[in-house]
Length: 202
Image (tube, rainbow, N blue to C red; front, side, top):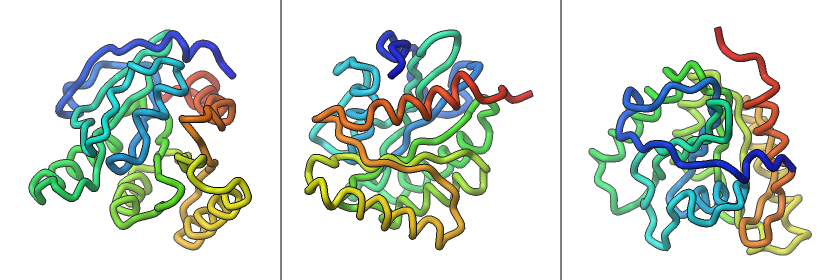
């Protein structure tokens, strides 16, 4: 566990990628609306009010930057796949995510957040297609693990791993529970590697 994440602070929100702040290194979190993305960020930083959470899907509509330290950031990307969002907005999200994932030189990795009970929905595959095109490292976070039996968690991880492998997608993955704070050390290890150990671009 790295206590550096417990001092993470909100810096800015942006509607478009070209409005995002300059960073040395950043890791982005993306996931379907109501998959537990913002809750995961809050659990990892021990700040329940850092990323805005809501029972209403689709609450995160902006690209939110949170500084860990030394210009290294966590980024909360807009939720996707919310049924009540118009097709125009869905297409706008896809354009924005393509621009962000392909154009951010300081982006070191993507954490794809999925509800362990409903992983790899069609919109998740849309995100992974963008991620693959951008060539960004991938970590899959299967959230809400407390909602299923402990014996089922390993099977869920193995099933997702097989689907990704069959699709030719390389990724690390784990289960996670914001409610029980399970899996925090494993995510911190991934973030440490991407933000602090991995050679910086350029």
